[in-house]
Image: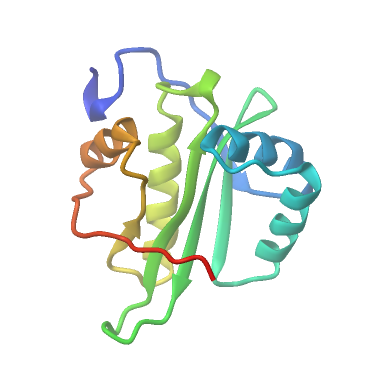
Amino acid sequence: MGPGGRAASSSIDPQLRNARSGDSVAVAGLLGELGYPTSAGQAAERIATIEGDPATHLIVAEVEGDVAGFVALHVQNLVERDEPGCEVAGLVVGKRFRRQGIGEALMEAVESEARRRGGTHLVLNTAHRRADAHAFYEALGYEHTGRRYMKEL
């Protein structure tokens, strides 16, 4: 493993930008890789909703014209803190782009955006089965602090 928990391989410099409706096919594909099957139409609707929601921010990483990954930030008012609560609402890098520094670049961008919005902490959720993701986040300085529970409504 190289610095930051990445395998030793060459890093590339992705272009980071806000997601737009034309990214829907790529975003749908990335969501599928993450285990959330999504149609391009569904992704387009979600991107449009996010564009109209000041509490949510969706950043994509583009490499040579291809959307290689994305990260989403959600900001909310908290009862337990004066500062806004900032959460990584999703991170994925496409399989063919992994271990090239793109995930780290996306996390740096989302951390910057969270700070810009007044956040002092950034939280995220990851499934128990994603040991590679756990190692990635820990290499970036995140610590395991609790459990998440969910109930279908």
